[in-house]
Amino acid sequence: MKNPNSTIRLTMAQALVKFLSNQFIQQDDGRVEPLFAGVFAIFGHGNVAGLGEALYQVRDTLPTLRAHNEQGMAHAAIAFAKANDRRRLMACTTSVGPGATNMVTAAALAHANRLPVLLLPGDHFANRKPDPVLQQIEDFGNPNTAASDCFIPVSRYFDRINRPEQLIHSLPVALQTLLDPINCGPVTLALPQDVQAEAYGYPQSFFAATTHRPRRQPADAAEIFDALKLLSQAKKPLLIAGGGVLYSQCATQLADFAARYGIPVAETQAGKGSLHWQHPCAVGGIGVTGSAAANQLAQEADLIIAVGSRLQDFTTQSRTGFAGKPLLQINVAAFDAHKHQAQPLVGDARTVLKQLDDALQAGNWPESSPVDSQWLAHAQTLNQQWQQQYEALTQAPVSGLPSDAQVLGAIKRQSQPSDVVVCAAGGLPGELHKLWRAEGPGSYHLEYGFSCMGYEIAGGLGVKLAAPAREVFVVVGDGSYLMLNSELASSVMLGQKIIVVLLDNRGFGCINRLQQGCGGAPFNNLWRDCEGSAPDIDFALHARALGALSEKVGNVAELEQAISRARAADRSYLIEIKTDPAVSTDNGSWWDVAIPAVSSRDEVQQAFARYQSQQQQQPY
Image 1 (tube, rainbow, N blue to C red):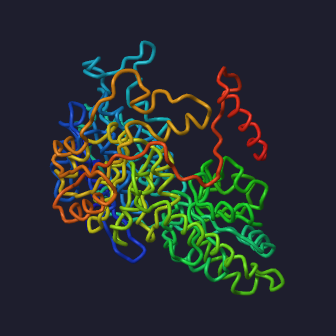
Image 2: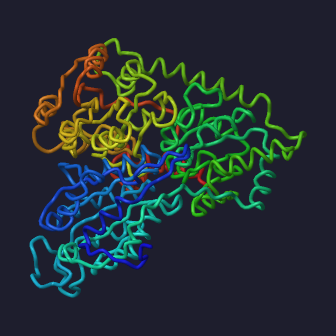
């Protein structure tokens, strides 16, 4: 019989990767897959000797992927997890100093979006013998301070592994955090470079193959009873599908539930794609960037049922979209379920929907108070009117530069149902949320919890790694492209083709519009309003320099032809098109952006007066 207490002598880094290599996930259909699909790595003196050597030994079972920017590779890893509904993960390792701190923005993004990623930054020597080492941060009053401390406020779990045996405690906690549906988010294990290379006799049992299964928490019976009471009084309920619908993999259950009871469904940015755009209950995006149909229904509804949403300000129109209405919050996290004075229904979205459905079908919805039979028909009429607006907004322009909406219309006309659209920041997410016709779960990938410029191309790479059989379209503005484009080269190197459509409005067009909407003068956003002379940037040429194929197009018709060529290409492909920075799609919504109370500009004073009026719609 094997001795359960037998040990194996490994370095800390070797033990770390051996543990990761033995973690598996069982999907709902019974498939068992490695939990970690690989490790993105940029090596330096803080990780190349320890973790680098350890990764080399397991490269056949835990692939190491080379990237070009630490923030970019972490974005790709996060996008991979999002595209896998948080069921599969990746890790990222860097050197000390700037290599580590480059990942802090990505950690904040993962934290805001509740997405799992394992971050393994190198750190200075725990034994302090060679202090101060290259790139070490020195705090005159605290020698324990390190650059990796920057990860503490943006990590769900943080530990610095100062002894090899710490892994025995820290790694299981890290795994629990990464997989927990409530506490899910980034985990940072800072790895001092000397400790990475130190050996310890680890228990063999620590490396036993472990299969994890998603945990599905049911709702409390009393909360189900209270929810049914709310439902029994509602004649015009509106469902809001959040990201939790996709992470719980219950889009089908939600669609069936809505159809059975005649309830329209609006979607948040994270939840878009929960329903196919042609589903009879689908009414489009909700909130500041939503459809006019969904927002009108929110105003008319007598009950809002939010499923898996944290209800941030874009969804609620800064608490004016459905203020004062009864709100039922179905969420696995009590933190979210209690927001906005809601009636909480805490539990896994799929499990809770089944609990409600079973109770309703058992006759717990009083016959005297069903959903108004005309409510869904009314919603469908409003949605049809919005779809007619879509057709007008997205058709090719007769003359002049196209709008973002017209470019998105061209992409959609050339897309297939299996395609994925990826975006993150600027004006494009608003146009996508209002206008993109999502073909179901996985077809719409927006990072909007942190709205991080620079996520787009790296995120597209992560989505392609997660779904290699699908065509991935990255739509990105010139501003975001200039911030972070290096993972376009990584996509070429890794043979993971993405199609990038770059909309060049010559600056930060979205913020320029917001600036003027707040009464400000055009200033420091578009190239023409900045200090100095505007550069003439050839984005297509730059993409070719990174190894991608590319071309410039002059109008929407040429764009559609170029998309056909990009689909047929054997590697990543960038299409550059100039767009109008002044045009965006209006849906009549409001977003709380504080206006200066004192200004010499008449425009600001007028904007402040409007602001005060609109604030009156907020509940407090």
